[in-house]
Image (cartoon, rainbow, N blue to C red):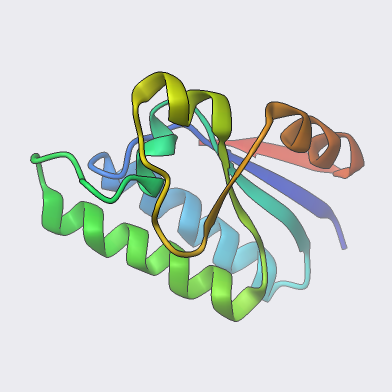
Length: 118
């Protein structure tokens, strides 16, 4: 089985892209692949913002909750770029998400057979 690192650059209000990444993560994990981490970068860091975008906020809340539930069940860490948290003024206070540097993503990607970007 493969080791996989996921990179998500879509904001939660772009729930179709986030949902696509989550479906992939669930399917890969269920198939026995090891997912080292899901790294939220670019607009993806808004998944860790307690104040969601006003556009489609119910959908954004649903997809963030779905990521949290899947992470808790699968024990796959949800990591958010700490530099972009600061740059974008995102508070990073959402349970289940932890702030890490880009080096964390690079290390996981280097240990992975595949790095999948959404």
